[in-house]
Structure formats: structure tokens, C-alpha cells
Length: 99
Image (cartoon, rainbow, N blue to C red; front, side, top):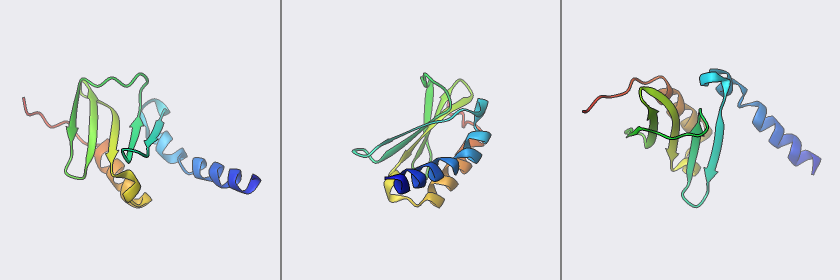
């Protein structure tokens, strides 16, 4: 049991760089295995006023012009590197105005 716990803690510690780059140094993650979706939230509660689906199946959620979270579709079928690239690509993006 201790070996599994140590592995899990190590996995959490690897998230520190992502937390340091997050707005307000805060990050919540939730994985829904039934939908195979990873939710990344920078704010709680995370109520979006708008959202945008990117061409790499990431939904960027906005409150005004601020990104408040990401929804990563097909998360279980992606490698850690693919998820990291999708997050890095979309966190720094500017909102596309279509209205």
C-alpha cells in the first residue's frame, strides 16, 4: 500500500509546474471516466459565460475574456505529452471573436 501511495504522491508533485502557471496559482482537476473527459478549472465555482471548441478537441471555457477552465475530450486516449501540449497551446490563447 505504501508503494502505491508514494507513486500517487509523486504524480501529484509533478503537477506543481502547472499549478505555478495557473491563474492565482490554483488548479482543480476532475476526470470523468464514463465520458473520458478531463476538466481543468482555474476558478471555483467555474461558471462560464462562453466556450469555444478547438480543433484539437479542447473546450476553452471563458468568463468574459478570462479563461476559467479547459475541458479535454478523449483524455484517456491521449498520452501525458499530448494532454500537456493541448493545455499549453490553449491556456495562452486569445479568445476568437465571432460575434
